[in-house]
Length: 517
Image 1: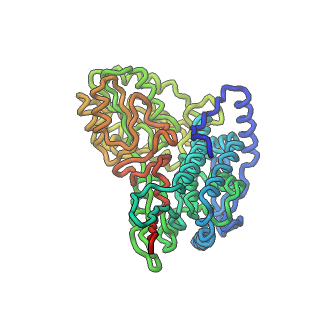
Image 2: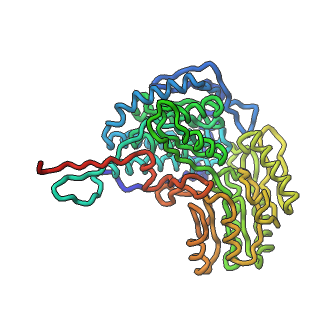
Image 3: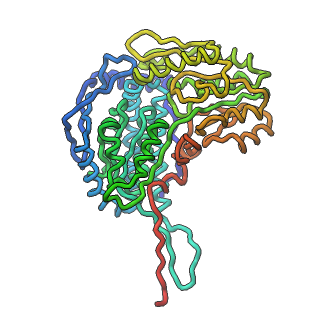
């Protein structure tokens, strides 16, 4: 009997012992920069004919590691290894599969600050953001282990006279796991462990900007005793192997987190039948958002400004849940904008190896160019009142940016930017604020700041977001407590960290035995 699930607490780096350990792990990681890492296929570390580098976005001259780049040949080998492993893994009792995740959780806990350090260096997360990422990964392992045990127990069915009916859940097969770079351990671990504990084998293609964290996860699962071939680690570009894996006739499902355009492409490719394919592929996709915070006139404006600042600029706005719009009642618009600007001006930007820097770099040059592009659009569509400047140096740094007086249908208020750019929009009243909030093609997260009970109830009913928060920030979903996933173009409505998530990686089999034949 497992103890009740509880979320991990976050490390307090003001405690000298934790601070010292983090500093030591950062030094240790830097001493290991530039090492070469292999693919992992069928229980063996494998080299390919090509390689790519992962770099430190705080200092683009530093190479985190050199990774084997899988080709179609290695991807095909990984799928075959997965098929072979699935034949046995699917028959492992659910409690044994869950035990692997629980052991992995313990190993990850032991190596937690080591992983934190690598994430600071490879992804540019500050210390607290990095530790929150790893804590969430541990939560996913613990939560999904318990969920699989629950699903393996007797399921309720309506009695049938003279028969013994039962319902059991069985795995799907071999699937592709395509996680993002922005939560390189949390989302990767959640997507992968859910599929694995349900009895499937997986082909894990980590994001090209975060392969080191994917490699660490693979090491942890091996140490936890996962049988060979159940997890196959194949870094590579979407162009070289992504489409190949998605279209492969032996791939049963695809679990993806990333951009709208790539998600739609995966959904389209998976929908087309391929010769030798005997199923309709299942696609689980989380595809981003254009998340809005509503600030009503009846609220604590200082608290609302603090929550908006944290939601917009945590991890440089590179979260699918990040606030990219704030919709403010006209009666408090000017006062709120002043508070927001004041708080943004206090944000420190620089290499996050330094614990005193709140905002680190954008993930790569392309991300920096995209943010610059939208800032220039914003200058024309609205009024840039803070930030907008690139910070000189070896990293991909840019200031937190605020653009006000934007029309709800402006590009900066409609299109996902994925950076520290906040659009400020004025609303005449609360009804209009709700309409503006719902006026994009996305529907992932949102927040409302108000003490008006009628407005709270209206938001609960009408604000069309998969994760809605009242009087708090719109980021920081907790496994179990805030099942995560959005509506519309934000994805397929899956709820990661929720009680129904594992059902996406299983199929129900109904069996009934006649008792008096």
